[in-house]
Amino acid sequence: MELLADRLLLDRIVQGLQDNQLREKYLQEKELTLDRAIELGRTTALSREQAAEMIPSEVDRIVNRKQPKKTKEKERNRCQPLRNSPTTRGVFWQD
Image 1 (cartoon, rainbow, N blue to C red):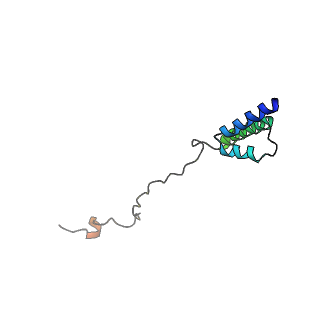
Image 2 (cartoon, rainbow, N blue to C red; image 1 turned 135 degrees about the horizontal axis):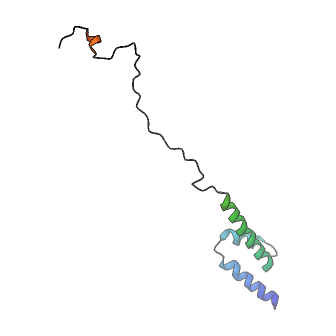
Image 3 (tube, rainbow, N blue to C red; image 1 turned 135 degrees about the vertical axis):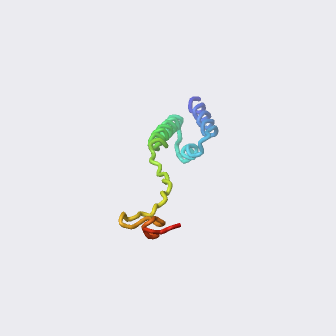
């Protein structure tokens, strides 16, 4: 009687699973027992928790932001006069 109850419970567990990957694992087992199903379920849950902990959160990530482009100002040599300065028009330039 115990084997029948375990088998019915196991069938109900497999049918009621929302996780298709775990259901496929159960169905691939040749001799799936209730104890083996519990063991597979626990190891799957633990491995998923550990995998989730390994994924870095957004806080830990380095985000490369595009910096605004700086407008290049024309560099002027100190020896060169400014455009439209009195020295370029001539010292005695009159408007």
